[in-house]
Amino acid sequence: MAPATPSRRLPKSNFHRTLASDGPVSAAPLDEAAPHRGAERQASNFTHPEHSVPPRSYHEAETLVIVCCHAIFHPDASSPTFPLSSPFDESNWHLASFQRSDPETGKPGEHETFLGHISAGMDTLTSGAETGGNLLVFSGGATKAALTPLSEARSYYNAALALAIYSGQHGGGDAAELFDQGRILLEERATDSFQNLLFSIVLFRQITGHYPKDIRIITHAFKSKRFLDLHGPAISWPSDKIRVQGIDPIMSEAEYHDTVSGEERFGYKPFEEDCLGTGELLSRKRSQRGWKAETARELGANLEESVQQLLQGKHVKELPWSEARFEKPERLDSLSAR
Image 1 (cartoon, rainbow, N blue to C red):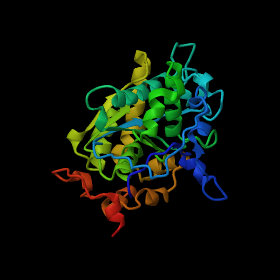
Image 2 (tube, one colour):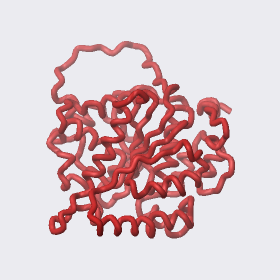
Image 3 (cartoon, rainbow, N blue to C red):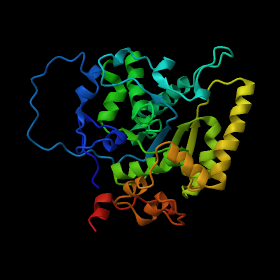
Image 4 (cartoon, rainbow, N blue to C red):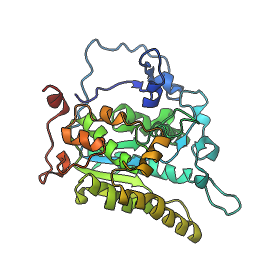
């Protein structure tokens, strides 16, 4: 598969596509999908040239930055009122009961932490000397289908737009521009932390034609062990090429101990016993969040046989990224031409 070409159209989420009964859903033009971006623009007489748009070049892309999504920011980005939808307003988020604020105890809503994750991800593209080699992936599927068909990843991108508007960046600012440039990608299939990691690696490969050299995961600090001790080794990712940037919610002593205990019991332990998440418990959780087994075959299209097997829940000893020299493999278009 050749690298993606530039587009001025904002693609619909994968979940929206599955609901279409009369064929594929046409992607709305960017200014239709996000009218707030064009609200301040004057009509233009610009005529597009009659030549092909050069394909994006990802030859410098080396670091995959994954923001793991944990909730859904639900305001409609295609609505004219979207600029009024504050990402700091808890009512604009679909949160689990344990993520909500508690006025009696003073506990703040965890959406503020999720905004911290988003901002940290954006910083990897806009601050520092190595930003040019980074690609940012918001990872999370449509896990709350009973409430909305919106994916967590799509909603985090919308929240990034809302943050930019809130800070005075017209039209979505850096978030909109970086998305247009292909520097922000949306992984809309993952239903748990293992899939956040693996599916983001696959997306990076599908888009750039090669695997990342390094991975940075932005999530809760208390989940660091899960990624470093379990998920990375489960897919044979080199231990010196994966790092976690942990940002925890604001917690009291009691809340901290409850959180760490819950992570050990319901997060770490199940994956310790079932590292690929294919057993009864973790498979059931995935199904409850909208996972379908056939999706694994779709994700593995045109990829190496070993990666396809891993996606289907099989233990694989040798994977493209587990090679000692960690060289870039052949491009996807070369593989698919065979």
